[in-house]
Length: 410
Image (cartoon, rainbow, N blue to C red; front, side, top):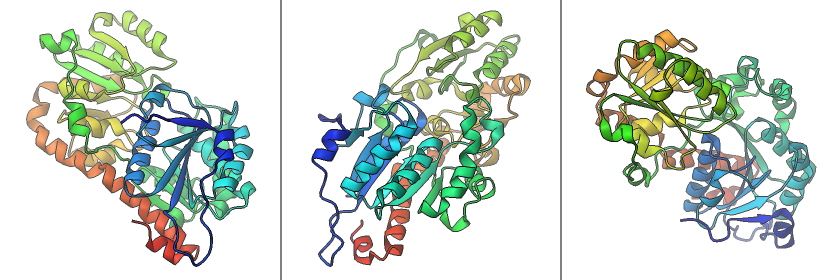
């Protein structure tokens, strides 16, 4: 259900703050969680955060989402009654005092932040606010300089910032094994603070969303295998390798590609498809609020990334019963596919290796029946993810000496 009051300004939130928990012997109110994120664009992280917020609400927690800027494709698709507070900052640095004011007014039990710079801002804001709120950061992206070279130079200092601010961090969540290792080895976080929690991908409405109708000439004709990929059009997704692989594949096999997603590389990728002579076999469909029907009807889903935090789209494709082909990139795909038990893994950055995998499309559904893929996808359910976060929150509250408060959590 779409919320009829999706967001409010920071000033409005501060003028009517929710009643903070009174630290007394009285029976405690429901535990409160503030989730802090950058915005409401249609990326995997943003979808994941809103899904988790809805799940935690369903478990009885008082949840608010605070955003740096209330912008993006998901603004009109917010879960019902989820309060969105807009800091309306022009820079992340401005978020720190504004978020601190909000924390001081609301005094939530937990502040859950997402993504690198926002995680740093969250820890600084909580320290500035001088509240008992426990900060939980969630790492969705690789911390390695090898995977942040195309980003702002400030990303190079994120591991150092995490290390320095570790005393102000209640816990750190990594969405994949590789990211958990990086938090320990690159950021120097103590192992006791690091928790592996896979993303929430498969929810109760997943099947209904997957079965929604979708039309496209190539899906109706079925004269050639149709591949689909989805993700932001950014360097980390390496769509260029996928286009070169498709060009090589089409020299000896038929095949077409649907590209779902938007981003800065859109025009360049279109030009590359023309240069490769495959413009008539690639259709750029832009951002799709519900990509699942495309996944369901495709012959295979393809991921060409050089780096992933987890790889939600792989789970979504498997949940639709569609075979997947993925680069064996850091981090996530090999974990999701159990090192190749549930899909094809190929070398990153290699058009030839990826083209070889595309050439196996005809036999993929026999090798990995839909029922097998759906069963694997069910391991990454919304309820399992929310339960794991809840366990982390409960442990932090209990460790802070609020035993009855923790006991009242679901």
